[in-house]
Amino acid sequence: MSHTSSLTATVSWAEIMDFVTSNCNPSTRSVLDVDIPNISFNNADNALSTSRLLTAGDVAASSSVVLSSDSHYSFYTDGSLINLGTCDVSMGWGWVQIVKDSGFLNSIATYKRGIIRDWPSSSRAEAAAIYAALSASPANSVIHIYIDSQSSIEVKAHSNFYWNDFADSLANTAHTSDDAVLISRLDLAAVHDYIMIYDDVTCESNPRHLFKQYHQMLYMKDLLALSRFRFVFLLTDPSRYMIDWALTWHTLMFQPKFDNSFTKENVSKHYTLKFQLFLEDLPTLELLKRTRPDLYVEILTCRSCEDHLEDFMHLFLCNKRCVRLHQLLTSYLHHLTHKIKEAGDNANCDYFPLVDRITSLPCWSFSSSNWSSYSLVRGCLPTTFLEVFDTLGIPRLTAMNVVTAIHNNFVNKFRKRIWNPRSYDKGLWEHAMNITSTLKQSPRPKGLSKSSYIPYSSLPPPTHVDSCDSRTDWLKNSMQYGLSWFDHISGFMGRLTVLLNNRFCRMEC
Image (cartoon, rainbow, N blue to C red):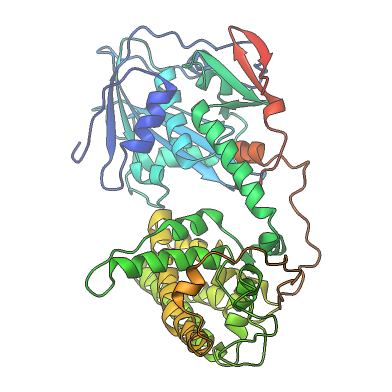
């Protein structure tokens, strides 16, 4: 077969997963040439298995292949992932054995389909299909496995090749089929010397990664506990505005390249401003009154309009700047819809409903009571931005890079058209008051009485804010349903058990 790559490996779940996630690419159809040694596909431990969970040995027993005289076997495999992020998430797999040179009508030897649970991903469904096919094959055989590699990187595509489409059909129908085989979670973890169990979910990932993920959740919990992030709990409607934290982090960590027109100093200032916006930590006059009360008096108002006290929200609501902000948001929307139209044209898809969906978001009109617009300028970006590109078949990382470029352009324009003019007006007043850069950088004078001034805030208090329910186990939801783990709060270490030498022990942490 043309345009194929080969991989020779022993049969283990870990190696199959590594191959599917690392070696497949959208431009090739992959073939696995595997010399299978004498490997026993036995269950890791029968203590946790149930009657419905099948081990590799069970799969082999229930999926007899048609024996080949030369010990060479050919399979087409495929996986299917549906309803990710919901309680109805399901991963299906299917394989079909092909007997070559036997004529089209007689070429199907046998086939099998099944499902797999926990840690949902399209790559895992693909790997399960390969695993099931290898488990059903005799030992000491040479196995050729043909994979629709595009589906393993979450790109909707069909090869228009009959056997691949047949394997795809098996994987898709496995979700509701009565004869679907459910592979044991313990069997997949049997390649390790120990098995970690979180409640009843087997932890297949590297333990180091799992604990790192847990501590990231703790950091996220501390971040969202800050009063300046309370607004995120009001944005829970995916159809209107719900924050995509992965996209938000990706955008925050992006650093534009510098050249003659955008110097290294500009890049540094841009990066700093982006985080100051995100953390609501811009040095507004209200903040400066608290940190340097010896230089900025309590009655000091915005130096641009001279009508209102200058807090974070006033940066956007000032009558000297609100028109510019509206122009920036309009430009943001224009660039985003332009990229959607461009992607729609390339995919030959109707993009008008997607443009309407983006345009109808409430974040494009800024007001003191519009938390979605407030979230957007802070850099907490919505899930909708990625969903529209996903609908058009754009890979997630590509879509994230597009949105990141557009948002960073917004931040750069905000710096030039709003923050720099504001800083210039403030600088004129400081010059008149003889507040020099040296004076501002000098240590705060000792002996000053502690200021009791409470900085003014035009932000309305978030109402009906319900933080994450402590009874909700976000880590387990991530394992089972693919739900975002960012909102996980507590109850992890006390419920993590390790199956070691066929005995349970609770970790003391």
